[in-house]
Image (cartoon, rainbow, N blue to C red):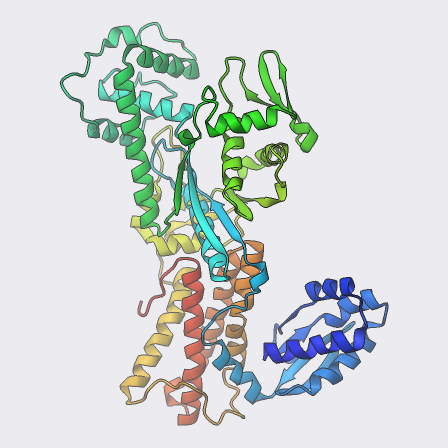
Length: 574
């Protein structure tokens, strides 16, 4: 029906509005034809006349009167009403309304091929210094969900994890493993800025050394250290690197491999797979003129950088940043920004139309800096979109669960998966707009009640499966079409909700908001449960049973498809 109504609207635009090419294109982009929120407002509604009135300088209700006449002649239209300042509400015949179910059963959203893009989504990208904690789970669920949704809409999507393996934090991890491996400190005196989790001991035990490993002079290594924690750990790193260089490399690479693999394993258990794992170290060294990082910095230094106090500064204020930024330190080492500059050049050079960075909300101030580096390198900053994700607060019996990787006292993503399963965890991470605060109560997620939205939605799907099985057990086959349905209205509200699936998916994709699918599932599940509680389906007249089962087949498919889009399996029994 959407196609027939769209053709009627296009006919009105072409024959009755007399708009020039540019105005017509503007109208086509702005006007909406969508399902009505409630059936008392019709089955479909459009704001075409409101939008057109601004372009044609004509009264919107007068335009609506003309449009109503055009739409009324379309097949399947029962009547047309004008509402408010110029909305046009379209009521279908019952036959046309229910025939939409047959068209919707394949559940393929409408896709404009001209809008399909090559998109890269980089998300999670936690430092490889320990297991993922529950704070990382929200970004993982969000990035994977938008990738699935965009792929369903026809875009070519690539998912990437950026491994920060060249920075100071990995050096601190390696130092911590070294100190545990050779028992350089007890638990009380262990450096405050080191990594203290039990996983550090596990890594230390996993690294096997041969007989050529040197004896560690612990007294020399650990005496006369600075009192300030960060200075203390930096001094230990320097001493280990200078005195035990070969051993340092073995432990650093072994620790990095161990943690990276544990992250991959946890994400796989969370049903998140990446197409690409990009290592910061692959960008090379500044001292190597052929490296990616050296080439990228050379590009911006030519026109948009200057030297000051021995350092090289990017003129980022020229591109909207609040101050210029150092990209090469006084000692010749690159900064975090220099690596990010080279990484984004690498991404854009791979030919993506859009790169989406999913960052924690604490990175808000970093957006302008990256935009500045992109423009300084001669690219369009609008090719990058940054989606900020608030870290979720996990609650257990009303108390906030700790998430600090350094302290070692934290609840891991693996623990959460083992506790409530990947699907319930993903559902709750996505249950609210990503840039809004989220309190995630494990107790509610475990419960089997309507307070647990995940359970409530899955129960709707399972209930329909149960009804279908009972119907089949009575000797029937599931109907493939409605039967004598002109006067069948028992499921109208539920069908109207289910028909909205493709529009919800499109909106979720266009706005990068997978929580819209959760909200939709909530409404659809609520509509089904109310219908189920008010209706004895298998005691209804035979003809009504056929039509109800056909309608419920659509609802079941919509629930399953919606869950699949956010990486969740639908359950056939609870």
